[in-house]
Length: 496
Image (tube, rainbow, N blue to C red; front, side, top):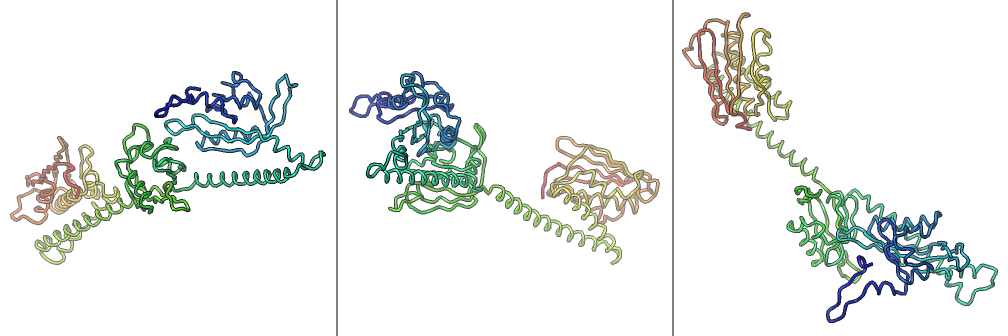
């Protein structure tokens, strides 16, 4: 008893013995634990049920008072509702037979009861005990027998009392069913809903969606700042007080809130649309705040990703147009005639297009070096090229630059070098070390090579395309046995 009914002395007064106070209450009271076993009973309870306290403490309720019928099911359902919801539940009228003591002849006696079941919450807001206050209304029920039984007409006023009791019972049952239906709708609503009551901002209700948002914590009966301590510094508790003080609703759209959704987990950012609506009495007093909203985190992330993609697309288009403009300008300067310009310009655009296709396949996250080289060397016979090196992923900027370099090298080899005849071969070897790529393009078996007297656009493109933002280099060596191109590049250095 001391673990449940305790007290502290009031200022200027002696200690109040709450245990004794509980015992002498004139109305029957008993307390059950979560397993529906007796924890405490008062004297009035023992008296009306004709049982001894020592026989009840620790006993299972339905062992002490068995009832496998409808009344037993109704009583158990009411107690389970209190355990589940943490809310008070009432049984306005329930018939329940009570075993009579042997001194009174034994057997069972049908009695009628009106019971209220109230939760006793622990520090986390979870229902730890159930307190029942029960009233024996058997005499009132017997008025019904008086009204219609063989005993004659009831005393003046008794029939009206009986009719009013029957009407009240029917109304209570209807209200109970409606309340249960409304609660089911409330709990299953797709948006999150909570009711916060009083100046202390205690959670009175919270539906399933709200519990999912906060990580299924025990919050009923606890102040917001205690139940969700991480939201205090984020300003939400102050905002609730503001809504109550100003008596005006607050509407938030895609607002960020960081929640600890599992114990000891880091804070997780969520985005919510919500309304804080003050709850007002007819007299204009504010009694709490109604919270309603929805978790829009997925929508916010999708919108951010869409904006990122649009910005990326704009950036890529500008880069591509600048590249096309440079190719057109330089090709026009070096082309001998319009036909030569068209051929060279179209081939370089096709090389750019192939690299774009590789990047599109990966949503522009990058492309493999081997795939970039195969896009240019693949059309030649497998005996005319060799690729050797580890897997290397290029950024979009690196892939575009390498695509143009590989195209110029392959085009030059097809026109003047190793790929111009059936016996020629191109070998490409590369290694990576300390985040840098070293690649060698080597031709052999083609016509003799001589150093050109004039640098064309292709040579300049090869040597300059990896410079600047990529901070790489390409060097051409016109060896007699075939062209050699050596490339060095820090990997992952540019994403543009």
